[in-house]
Image (cartoon, rainbow, N blue to C red; front, top):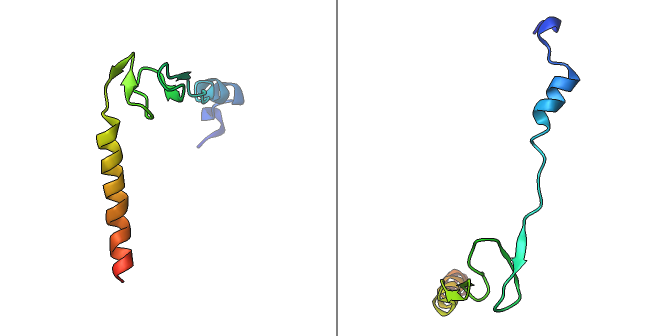
Length: 77
């Protein structure tokens, strides 16, 4: 690359000025007071704006089954 084509530090840094990371915006769940992402159902109670969106009892059973299936082959060896 020839020196005349090189972008100056100012041009390079102006281009990179939009690359900064921002903090994740969280709110407190009104039902269980755990932190959750905005505009998403709570991962702890499964509610969004007072309505049950995710049936957490089913999700917990599914997670337990997954953990159980991962540990079962290890015990048989």
